[in-house]
Length: 431
Image (tube, rainbow, N blue to C red; front, top):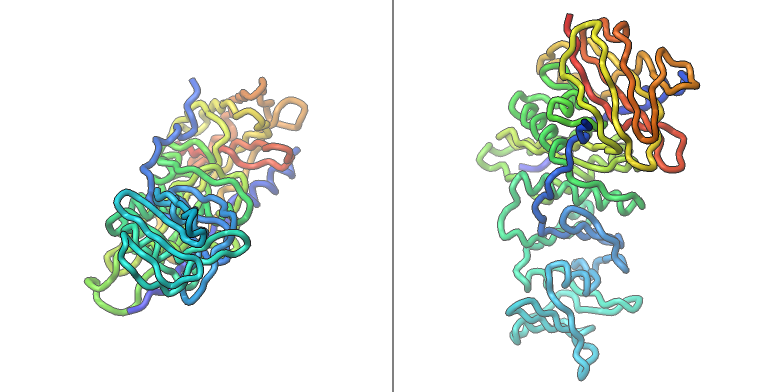
């Protein structure tokens, strides 16, 4: 029985919408701030990378990790302090390093393959050593001395240090995916994203439906796309979805291993090697992420990443409306975010079979059919903009056909004059 490499689906998310826009010249918090998720006592190190995943985020290191004698070597102080230990140097023996945490004391000597754990001598495969004025220690020895579990993923040369004390649950692996995403973003000089419960519920429900029904697609059995699912879950921002699936070949169902840190590393690595998914993970405007995981009982693990762009708060919209009904679109954007446009996209949606879903690939959201700009631009009706607040009543004739309408809000960020989607809610219009 062997694991397959992840299979991934990409989403072409906003290119078509941008082209359409550029060819045209109270408040409900957008998915209210998520409660602080539990702390994840897990660290990820990658050989040759001067950064580490810690908890739900990532942090830079003052030196890159490397391999020696088949062992991952990491900066001493970071390795010790990542699980709460203190580091001391012996004034009488300057080459000695002492690491203490509660009742455990580890003593190493730079350049020596002999170490001591609470006074008991042990042998090392690789000694502590100094490189570029930094002391490096073997990660596995030091971590396991303090009762942490260490795993190694060879393809990405990643070492995982877990102090959970148990095999990770699906919920903990969802949080771990956030750590890996933030590690990828940090190594590409991007800001981290934060956990979003609404997006996680969205992704989890879709992953479970795919696992239970036996399909793999950005569309659901109802024929709807991620923006619709996020709206139904209570979200009001824009979301962009990545999907990945890993399965095991051969063996019986009883032999399939449970998802673990190494499988999540492999799935994230597969996404980063896919241009479309990599672009989504590394989109600078993303601010939040929700992750859903599900298993199908046959060795398959389904991963759903829902990236969120959160830049304001918006008045609520109905989930359903009658054809020809006007919609009031309003909101307040964050400071430094400039309103650009409100636009409408439309899709004629119908349920899909499992076979149809398994023949889909990448997705794009419906392109705008009409764009509303503020006064001074060609627009069917001007959007009222007062500071950070905007509002407009969409014309009934633009909502006359039954189907799923996407109500987009566009804005520009920072010094850029290129608009990005900051809200993408859906309203189902009936006859």
